[in-house]
Amino acid sequence: MSALLSVQGLTAGYGGVPIIEDIDLDVAEHEIAVIIGPNGAGKSTLLKTVFALTSRISGSVKFIDRDITALKTAQLVPLGISAVPQSRNVFPTLSVDENLDVGTYAAPPGDKQAVRETVLELFPDLKDKLDQPAGELSGGQRQMVAMGRALMSEPKLLLLDEPTAGLSPAYLEIIFDLLLDIRKRGVTILMVEQNAKQALRIADTGHVLVSGKNFVSGTGEALLADDAVRRSFLGGAAT
Ligand SMILES: Nc1ncnc2c1ncn2[C@@H]1O[C@H](COP(=O)(O)OP(=O)(O)O)[C@@H](O)[C@H]1O
Ligand SMILES: [Mg+2]
Image (cartoon, rainbow, N blue to C red):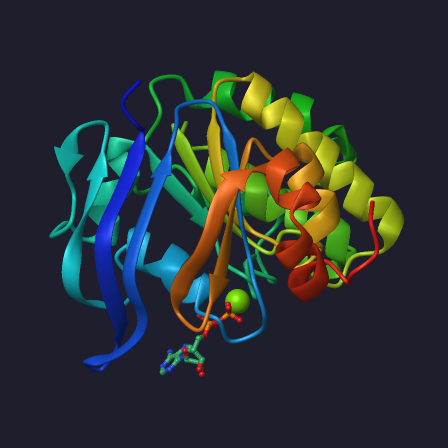
């Protein structure tokens, strides 16, 4: 099966200085793919590069067999790619409803009300907070707003950078369950996650990024069972 997203030989960084080097990575349709690795490994840079937010030095990115390497972020959203950045991912003074609406600007869905209903079914907690400024919500609820906004353009591929950062363990479970629900609705997910063990448990595939290079890729299960991965990136103990 051909990949939904195919990254080949990608080298990119900031101001011409490479941070990630020669990355190959395929994401199959309908999978949850997780990128793990130490702080500063270039995980966010990789996601940002797929979303055309860094300077690419070499390599290519294909999405549904189309070369999107040279496209700009605003062109990627209508093609079906949406992203939630690592932090500051809501407009704090806008209401929850207005935040969701912002998600439709770059790629207006055919039936905005229907998409909004679907998003609120996924995140029922937001239903009675629609008129509240997003900045007043808890961290977990803000993450739901950010994910909801990203889903308003009906993406085929959702890029998520540390969706559980700073959340309590209870919220972590909720967000991971939501990711499974989102996938069930036909959305493919490529995410970066610090909670590596939990993330690999829900992931179809995992990629370990170290010093800007792809150290190893495999199924979530295989990486959880891999001694070297466990010792270096999963805190050692067997799961
Ligand atoms: N906007 C930027 N400008 C210059 N360097 C950056 C920028 N963002 C990140 N970096 C550098 O790129 C490296 C990788 O960062 P990042 O991709 O954020 O790592 P990770 O997400 O794995 O923690 C770090 O050395 C960081 O300092
Ligand atoms: Mg990061």
